[in-house]
Amino acid sequence: MSTTVKVILGFVAAGVLFVVALVVFVFNVTAGVVDAGDAFMKKLQAKDYPGAISMCTPALQTELGGAEGLQKGVEGSNLTPTDWSFSSRSINNGTGKVEGTLTSSDGRSHPVRLVMESENDTWKITGVSISAE
Image 1 (cartoon, one colour):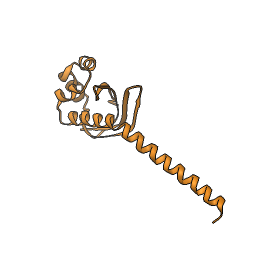
Image 2 (cartoon, helix red, strand yellow):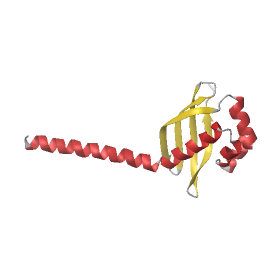
Image 3 (cartoon, helix red, strand yellow):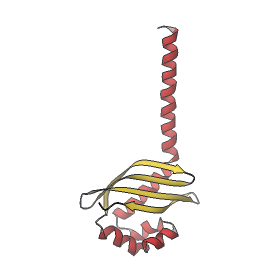
Image 4 (spheres, helix red, strand yellow):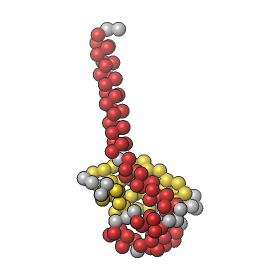
């Protein structure tokens, strides 16, 4: 094998390793927002509305009308999750976001977005968007 081919293969290998390291880094950095999003969705799935609302900031708790308001919004729109996946995750200037798809108890798919802020090393939900379409 010629020296040129070895050098090219070396650069390709280094590039692949860099991309893998970057992906691992991004997934590790954003794991907290995904974990918080999963925990929130599990509480909605279990109909643990007091538990779900406790994961929200006080401002969002008020906006949603507390646990009762959250329950009315979720159950009244047939949005109780049976399954979900987050296909996008990010953290920018202390604001975390996960986006993906929720499958509701009636079998329909809905876009879902959770926005969060870190408060004392805990991600608190600041915004919830589940499209009822």
